[in-house]
Length: 495
Image 1 (cartoon, helix red, strand yellow):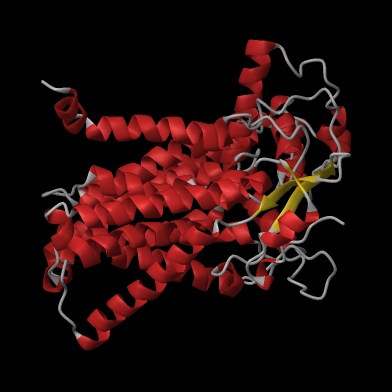
Image 2: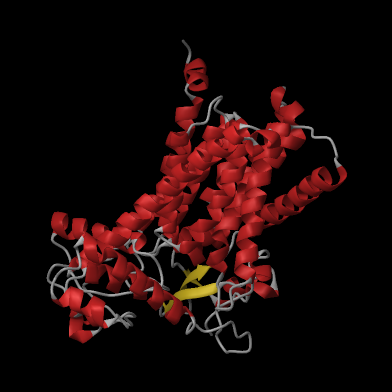
């Protein structure tokens, strides 16, 4: 067997290997830098330290992401001995830490967010591979996720979004894989529900994935009359209970672990806990299943009360980092996470900044998918590729449901809140490509694959151009301003 034949027969595994190597250098390499807080690390690192010291606390988000951040730090300290002698006492008595000791190493707290982000690239490739049934196409369109600067920079920090995205992509992979099965069982619904529950246990925005269940029901049986029959009603109740159990099992388990770890309050900081919950903790009975419900309900009251105090978007406020959902579609607005003068006339930046070529592909995919779905639903236009259309529809549904949810939230929101629908447009782009060029793909048209390779190179080149803002590399003010293609980005240098 020739080398060419070996590569052809093992192209799928070769693609995974290459993607793993590429995403290591884009997502993992040198992730411990910068050696200081950026963005929500100021919240999540203190939270992780509280877990490691059994300190009671509450925050805005569910616990899974912060528990994994704490687990990474625990493993790092255990294996290397680093950070064990660092004075982290100030982190135990504050929800937001402004500073951290100079000798603190970020390897541990950033470990799991980075690893989950790294693995997400492979899961995204698998999603495309199941949809497209073509390794080369799946590899090419994986570049939209692997080389998106804004996703990379945010996911390299000790934050929740990279962890949540992994579970979201896993849920979508399960959904797409199950959609290909001849027989879909309650176990399948349970497994997909478990992935959704894990994403929900990280951030509540994961709840948007429940829109996938009706599409999976359609794959079970496309007859509306069946679901109205007695047998169909019993079936849907069974599948609904399986899905609900899958969602709630990890969600409640994570909350139980959160409650069990907090056995005392530092400096009498009770985070508005009720007298009943305070007494439970003082008596060290927080891990008792009997007290779980009381703690969960009291935590919910805390969330509702504190969300009312979150500031609203104020575009007139100097230095406002928030932006409206409509601006996210065009990449607005960039956020300067961290900066430092290098003493040589340049400045190191860590910017939440999109890859403009990927952004353009996203906008184009969104517009074309709305036209395609609208034409089919409202005008009954015939489908060229029903299989691709079936996967476009749920991705677009997630997009619209998520953006509708964001438009009804009054608190200030940021560009990274767009990552979930943004990722959906990447999948839509791949599906549209297959939908439009299916005939050429089947014929393995050389020109088509050449154009695709050129686009891949273009995405990578633009990624490199914006990479100084992603990896905290020095840039002069003129170089930063040259990268601002739209004024809505507000990509401003430090003068």
